[in-house]
Length: 137
Image 1 (cartoon, rainbow, N blue to C red):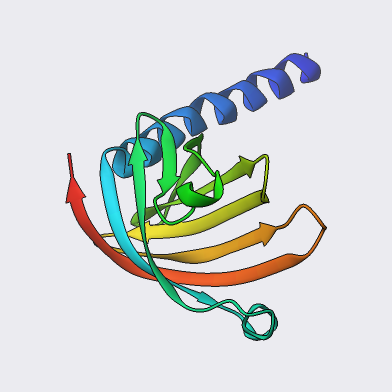
Image 2 (cartoon, rainbow, N blue to C red):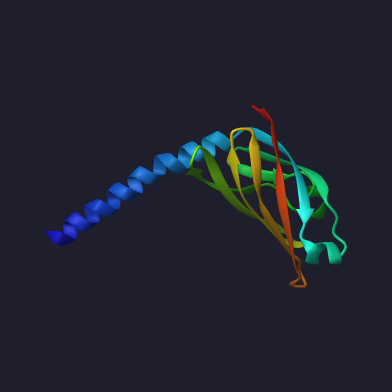
């Protein structure tokens, strides 16, 4: 009897989280964000500079327009409700340049977070980003 109550309890928690994830993904879906991406001190020392980027959330995928030229294409993202907004994460892969992992929070018309570029040679470059929503389709 106790085991079945435990199973029912776990199922109720899982079922209650599904709408949160769905509403978070819906909140980001169809949005574009103009962001400034700023390298940390170590990445600056490696020659990285601050740059503008546009993050696009469309059809369950996120694109970084600045990273497309390095071979990083749109990838599925996960999103969860976070206070009044949503938090997200995605990892993009480039055959030539390695991986780019993005995580952040969007609240209202603002977004901020971190990005980590792990190059093919294992070098890791860290960035902060922040910006504003430019549109919602």
